[in-house]
Length: 137
Image (cartoon, rainbow, N blue to C red; front, side, top):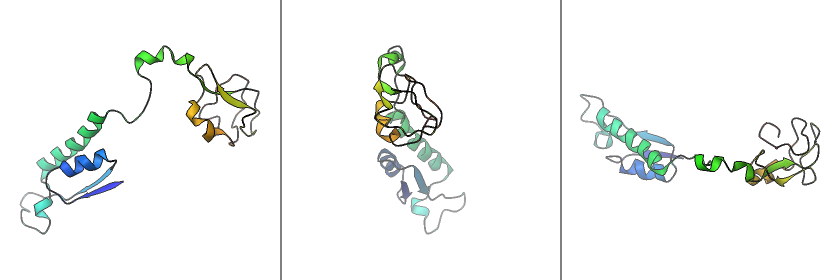
């Protein structure tokens, strides 16, 4: 999603980034180019720097977009379930509920990926108990 910014300052950009914008259009004003059609909402090099830092600041405030376990959770990851081969699967065989399932330990893809994996072709042979990971489907 993009944001075409014709406002002064960077509040609009902050709000747009918070709502998911990832591409920004901002008019810039070069030194000596003080009068022009777009000059009221254009940014000079210092304002542009602040603008960029404000947008980056939104990401910092919201945290990382990648959802993953924190360090304190890593020790217990093996206890979590994952998508696992529940029978031997030959290369080219189609993943189905008969050959993959959600079991412990966490050696395969997260359980939330099961529906995405079902119906795909197995890209390499898997043994019973082996994790179904990206690259095998």
